[in-house]
Length: 220
Image (cartoon, rainbow, N blue to C red; front, side):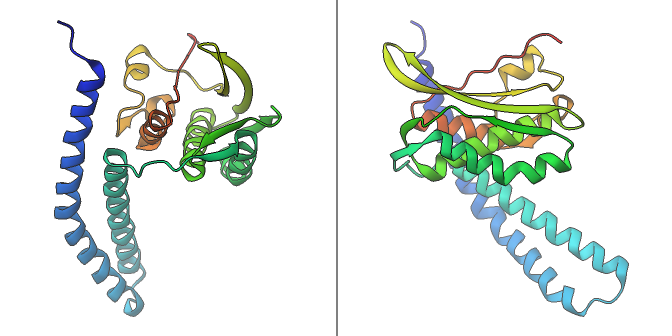
C-alpha cells in the first residue's frame, strides 16, 4: 500500500507546529531579556566600539525573534479570509514597493500588463506571496540581471484560472536545489536564492489557497 503524501505532509506540519510552539516559548523569553538589556544600555553608551557591539547584539536578537515568528507562522498560519481581488493590482503594488530594493541590487524589475485578473484570495496573504517570490527573483538576478512579472488567464482542468510567471536570469538551480527549494531554512545562496523562510512562506500560502507553485530552471 502506497502512503498518502498528503497525510505525510500533514504529520510533518503538525510536528513542526509542536516544535515551533515549544521553541517559541523557550527562546522568546531569553531573546526578549537580551533585547531589553540592550535597549537600556544603548542611550548611555559613549564608546563607539561598544555602541556598535550593542547594536549588533540587538539586531541579532531581533533576527532570532523574527525567525521564530516565521517558523510559527509557517507551521500554524492564520486561515485565509478570501475576498475578490485583482492580481494585476496586487502585482503593481508589490513591484512599486520593491523597485528601490531591485535598484540597490542592480537588477531591472519590470511588470507586463495582463489586464484585470480577478480571483478569490486573502489580500495580506496574496501580497506576501507576490512579495516573497519577487524578492527571491531579485536576489537571483542581482548584479546586472533582470526580473519580469507577467500574468494571464488560462484553463486549468477545464476551468478558468489565473497564472503568474516570475522570470529571472540568475544562474539557475541544480536538481537537488529545485527539490528542496520550498523547504524552510534552505540555504541557496550559491544560487542567489537567499536563506530563510521566503519561499517556504510562499509555498504555504499557495497551498492554503489551492494554488500550485511550479519551478523550471533550464540548464545554463
